[in-house]
Length: 101
Image 1 (spheres, helix red, strand yellow):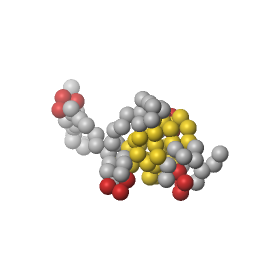
Image 2: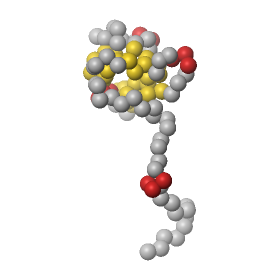
Image 3: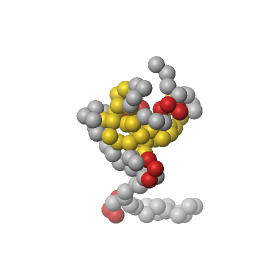
């Protein structure tokens, strides 16, 4: 089966257990090997322009004319908000700074 981006962008994204993650709104291509790098999903309702979710192709179980089915282990995490713990951030040396032992 083949599906166009226009058709794909109308499909809901569901987990195997039936949880609704949102709707496909775009995808990102890996131009080196001409494959999908990630599916970009917006949570419902799409019109509110909420944060987008990124789903790796390895997480996709099946795609048909009615839905995109992903593994139950797929975590609903917005990708654009990195979280850093204060203890994990180390000060980087300045560019062209001398390194001391």
